[in-house]
Structures are given as C-alpha cells and as structure tokens.
Length: 71
Image (cartoon, rainbow, N blue to C red; front, top):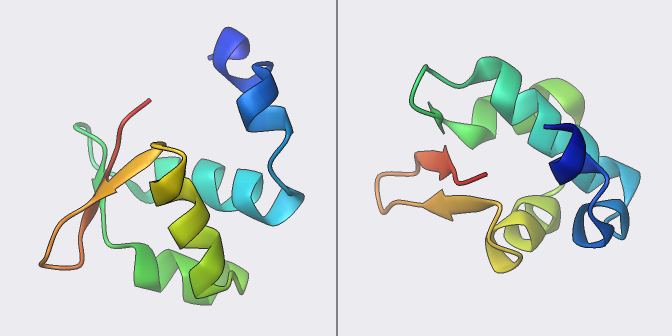
C-alpha cells in the first residue's frame, strides 16, 4: 500500500480524490466492491471526483452503479 500511495499518479490527484479512494476502500467488501454514491454522500465528494478515479483506473464502474477498486 505504501508504494501505491507514494506513486506520483496518486499524489498528483487532489485531496478529495485521494480521500474518496481511501473511504471507498474502508466501505468496500473483501473483494473491493462498493456502492460509491453512499460513500460520496457521507464525505461530500463530487461526481467528478469519482469520474477522475475511473479515468485514472483506480476503480472500475459497473452498469449497476457498483464499483470495484482495482489497486
């Protein structure tokens, strides 16, 4: 985990994106699946923040609305 969080691609993201990523990990099941909308409401994250995580490949969305954390 330490190598991952110290990677420049992770550090270059804003604090909201990094925070959302960590919170998604806290709420995910053992395989990394989580419903992001609930987590986003809890921490006040914007939809664009989740889109950034998808764009950078940190999470993979499914049509059902669930995502899986890929790292």
